[in-house]
Length: 121
Length: 107
Image (cartoon, rainbow over all chains, first blue to last red; front, top):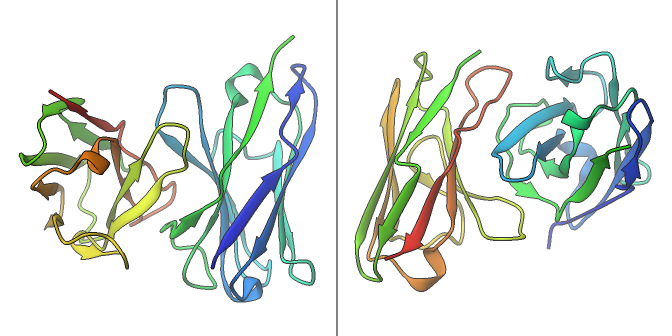
């Protein structure tokens, strides 16, 4: 059974940093692209970032490019999202999502339960 | 960016009803459209991909249709478990954008 377990969400002040983790199990992590998708309170999902299976390619939404960094450790079956220079607009539940192919294709087959990031002073 | 527009925002329906939700893309996306279901406090879950293909385990009362810019999701014989929010999403080109959602609520 596919399991994705996010952690690291917290309350942080504007301008601060946070690192999210997503521990994966139940599938061959190193064979799949992975993504982060966020959802602000009351809003629809918003794709944030994706990474290829071997970490050779990374992709970002314009809203986070230059501030967020996606990475993965295939030996630990873990996905990360380093978030810097956070603003109140980054407040959301952040979901880790599994894709089918090794290269990001934008189809989010399975989602974790989410980790809440609140940016507030 | 390819924008996705869903309608209606809210559908009020009863168990057993047929519900149709539409989704329009601002550019042609072929069949690269997905539908997700989200229940309160839960993550979205994939229902349909490639416009009309049911994800494994999804009941056959759900169906998807369309190509190009116009798409629809139908629920034939609404069940109590189907009251939720439904999102469409294009995966033709990055950024992969979602529609704003359609809430299916009990009449």
